[in-house]
Image (cartoon, rainbow, N blue to C red; front, side):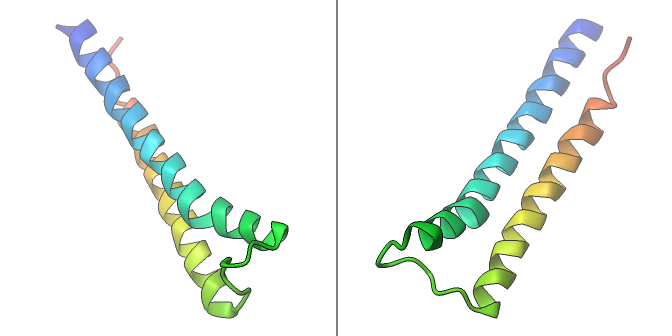
Length: 76
């Protein structure tokens, strides 16, 4: 049963990490890249925009940390 538990644990950690990557791309990388390339409908660089980008980045970091913590449940 240990192998099944370990595989389920790694799948959960992978899913959390994938969601974290999606959060980082959607909320942080995309607006920064759009501003850098001068896309017409890109958000204007204001404190509110930077704040929300930071929130998305913190959420991504938090989800990644939870995924790492889940991996500690792997049994030898």
